[in-house]
Image 1 (spheres, helix red, strand yellow):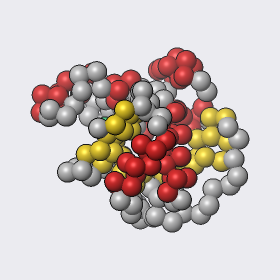
Image 2 (tube, rainbow, N blue to C red; image 1 turned 90 degrees about the horizontal axis):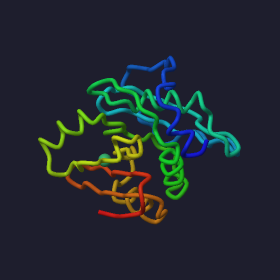
Image 3 (cartoon, protein in one colour; image 1 turned 180 degrees about the vertical axis):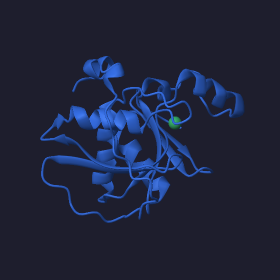
Length: 182
Ligand SMILES: [Zn+2]
């Protein structure tokens, strides 16, 4: 799926998802992915939902999986769903290739509605006015069992978008805007 169809996907993002509500084992060693299959596992630190999903096969994004991911990475404060740029998933996947692991990604933040972003800006100086979280182009993550600084270094080495390191909160912001580091 290209960027334009990602942006057009909009409200079509409502598919039923089966979430497991139990706290996961947060495994750091999952079986190897099949050739040509791109699979990611998530644990959402706020909703406690898990998602283990194959989002692409042989270079083609799975639209149904992308819809599930859109819903999974919704603004958990308002429940608003927005398309997530699939390029973010590819960055997350490539970071794991770099590190050589298939650990679970812990999600701190995905999509943020303008309302939520405004509210967060009122509380924290680190929230951008035109945050790419509001475009579905950013996630805040850490990788279970891996040093967050290592995740940051791998993301920077990819030179594919923005990378922000928040040491005190132990997470990395990754977005699909232009390459920049903070
Ligand atoms: Zn962020």
